[in-house]
Image 1 (cartoon, chains in turn red, orange):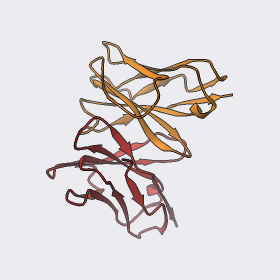
Image 2 (cartoon, rainbow over the protein chains, first blue to last red):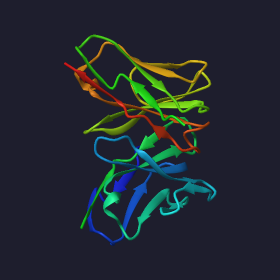
Image 3 (cartoon, rainbow over the protein chains, first blue to last red):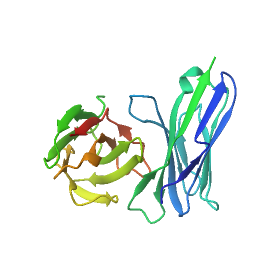
Length: 110
Length: 114
């Protein structure tokens, strides 16, 4: 039930865009996105709920394809501060458990 | 508002011992969740407590248990420690539900089992 993220790692130059994907084999109720910097706790970015509701930071955008059980996080005009590991977290439609994805390491270089 | 606090921050134990970790959520938050983070397995959900009741549980053995008090503070206990229990243990608090609300993570407790 652990969602699969792709790519595993990506290196960007400042100003470039990136897309991180999260895919589940189970029907999802919600998808969360978090960023974790080395040695720090994960920090919330966005929640996407079944039915279309979204909660998150203005500068972050994401999508949730309910038919495919896939979510994508879009990082545009990347900044050095975007570097870190991005995790998606998913709650199944049946509830009960919360699973984090395998993580995507993103490095932004000058 | 004060953030999520966890104590202790670092802990060293030996195999067979037991350990109790503590988490104080953000004021007003009723849901507290616990996660284990390791380089090999990533972030894994342990359990969620809401209003003193365990609402959700991950796939961990019964050696891992928790509880929540009336003030929403939560403790996690691991009995008969194994080497593989060495990890960063994170707790997160949310207003009502980890499914629909933002989770705010604490700094974690780094547990080393020798």
